[in-house]
Image (cartoon, rainbow, N blue to C red; front, side):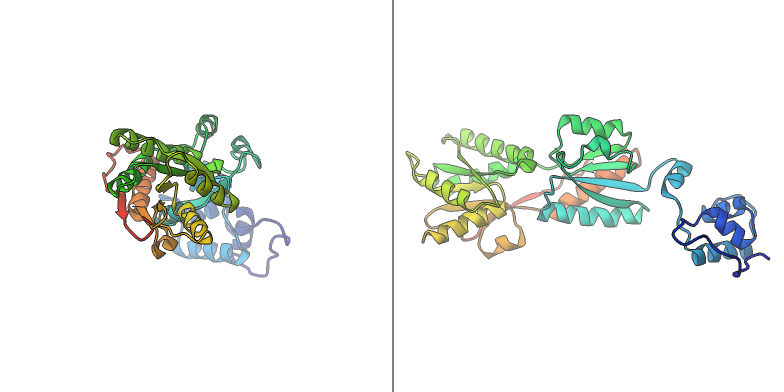
Length: 329
């Protein structure tokens, strides 16, 4: 009898198939396929359609993703690669906005915190077949080639954001406040090295343009407070003492400010410190170059949607950076 709930279901622990739904509904597998896949131009009565849907729900049928992708000719997955477990305020906001935008289009965003030491990218593709990969930065040329070899479309965040301009703005502001010997706090984390190198390049270019010596570089490790004191000591011991420091981001700027406090000194009085990002914690007193996270997220989302649609569109020019002056510089 069609739709007889007394018919035995699949064994516990076994995946419910369309054949199970067809057997329990008393209809053909083809009919089940037409209903579950919402196939147009097939004559299926409304009562049969409701029967199949109710039976599938009762049995707990879940469409098999690889088969669905094969049938549709595309995947519903967009994969975001975040390098080496690095997650930050700006990326967090970008991924949040991207997740919502993709959901509205019927896509699912998967976030993979990628580390070459854990698993090479080439081993990822047999596990997941995304329609598009969003690289959040920090990938090498061979790694980018691996994504292209996977046949997924690719959008790289690298190049969408003017990191060099952020470094320039830091130096320009310190110079406007009278600082001529400037330090640069470079992150020790290799996963942000490409971004950090761009910001440093911008700072160096601004120094050259303004006719002052290039910044004195010191590495700071967010997981090692001793590197903060080592950097402060090195800048203080320089032939011409450093009076202002560009920090790669607000996290490092906050560490430098705390290090100064521990030495009985004060950021903004004894050493000017400026960061980048304008994270919530920076609002307690860190001068920074703010990144408009929402505008940046919108730019990435538009690039992703254009790529998914095979559409070439001129990127909308939006102001992404703004100087925020507080006590630290």
